[in-house]
Amino acid sequence: MKKLLVLVAILYTGVLGGTATQEREPWIVPEEERAVENPLTSSDGLIEEGAELYKKNCLMCHGEIGKGDGPATARIKPAPPDLTSEAARERMTDGEIFYKITVGKRPMRGMERKLSEDQRWSLVIFIRSLQGD
Picture 1: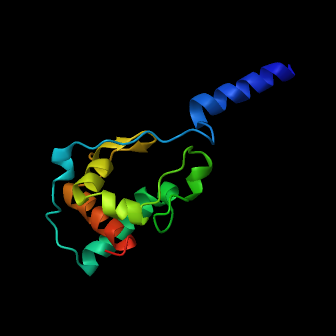
Picture 2 (picture 1 turned 30 degrees about the vertical axis):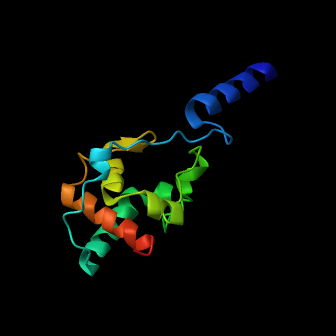
């Protein structure tokens, strides 16, 4: 019985939860999507709108300020990346962030059907505000 429980635990973490040592596969965004520019101009109102959308849709995994330390990360391995790091700020274009929000990648679901295009762009603006841009 003990061996069966160990086997079930191994299968559960390997199939459903991943492992703590599991590495993140690179998320390759097509160059044409990376090149897309945000059609909205940053404003306090759009940052506030993006913040509300972030709280409802992103905070559980990405954390309160985008560090990838949200409450749901106990079940997500590897945890989401830190969106505020200098490397993320320099590497990710607005188009890349928008693409990732739009299409998603397991375990993150895409927001194309849930949020309007302008709402997704306001999320990009909010994420940039977390990065200090």
